[in-house]
Picture 1 (cartoon, helix red, strand yellow):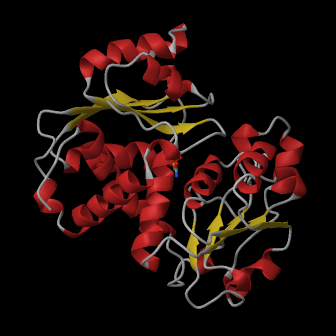
Picture 2 (cartoon, rainbow, N blue to C red):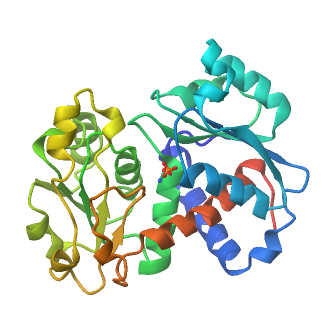
Length: 307
Ligand code: CP
């Protein structure tokens, strides 16, 4: 049995197979519509979510399976003090696979150690969000045609943005990736990621506070919101939240084929006047999330379908 806790839990070959499967599901969804008949997905969400929880549920329903779960800690026995370890032992009797989001870093890993069903990390604190990374990779691969040789700009809250951490870890495995890290000084990527990943693997990157200067160099711009829920001090959040706002005027500085991604939810960091620009693909990206999660469910349940 395999879990997905970190984006690196899939080898490059497994990842490539999974993305190919997601693309096949995207082009022929009817072929897969009964694959999970009789199977159940549990969504255990201790933190708010729209896309991740509902796209997981849509994915399982599209595969002919069923879903059960909770959407907040308050509506589960976590509110009475039940541990993640006890919860997953019980859920293992009720479902065949589970997706867990938790505010504490490492909670899905703990769950996986006590589980007899595959556990998928659907976001743990400021740490990782591997299924968002799969979504991002599928979006880039489908729309750019390749994952190597790209200059990717991450902009916004690079300190707390778990989607950024996961995608950096995934992209360093592709040749000739370069990063431009655009953030206020207080929200730069964590030191461990610089030292243990970027520096250790000699990945070229620069850090800047200047979005306008970075824009012309980018193949992908990955915008992020400032993560209000991870700040200790509201004054700091208010001071930093609108540091970068991508608008129509700034988009004129970008390449004609640059893609704008955002894991969503958007707050204020992308002006709605960018939405009609063909380079703005964040809503397409949310749609790809369903197909990649369908592929992941099939892969972790070991269900094979003739392509
Ligand atoms: N991208 C993402 O994780 O969105 P949700 O918080 O709505 O699940």
